Length: 329
Image (cartoon, rainbow, N blue to C red; front, side, top):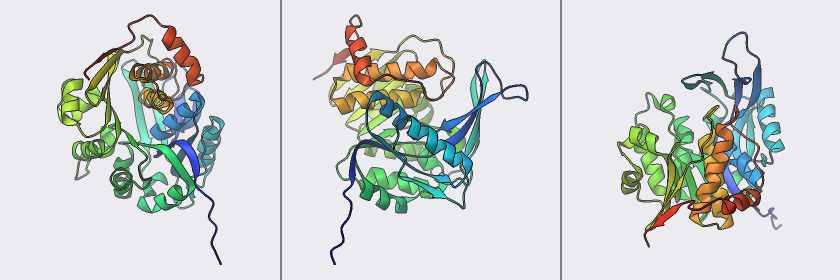
């Protein structure tokens, strides 16, 4: 008897990584007994998927959650943002992770409670079900995933090195979280550099690259991370610099009053990927990244409401020149 398999569904992006339940004080509050709180999903890769879905792309997010109410909350809210969560495994033996945000005048502090979480149990064995289910145009993950557990580190390396989705490009956001790497033998610098070198699209902050690898500017980051076809170096409130082959494109950051910086890098990656998926020139890809990041920076949430990408692009095209500078051949 011939076995009939359902063909894999096409999707624009598949993101892979942990999402937790995020507890955050309402605007103006601190992490204390007198504040009221919001309960929302929080995770780098699902933030990227949710932002891309809002921008008008088909986005899947793959992970594991506990078979608990917090896991229900995560899937329900993300599905409400347009993310396909059908690849999320529910684990009755492990909980959904939780983290707390404490906004302070010096910046937002974060406390994680994710040890032994369902997502920490992810590993290369999970990939077979995902490859059978979806055929993405791009696969996106971040440097948070390999820091969660040895099996998650093996999963990240399998995706980047073994390429289970064939020629689908791999997008990698370095997303260095020092607290997650304490006590790990390989260390963040070595692991994240290898993953970045073997990916096709890489996002990294100029400051985190300096902390990890001792680089000083966008050009020295490119000299070190010379493997990926496309490298985007984000320099906070200054600019973003894209290296594509021999071309260097710089677009200044948007001016914005910062309420909370958490999640802005995820929004930037989503905006840039939206432009790349649509085939826009590099200045528009960077402009979309800046726009999406600015919306998150100006809000207390990791996710901000975004219009469709075409609407944003129309506004970017109408902005006065110069919107960016490109050099090289």
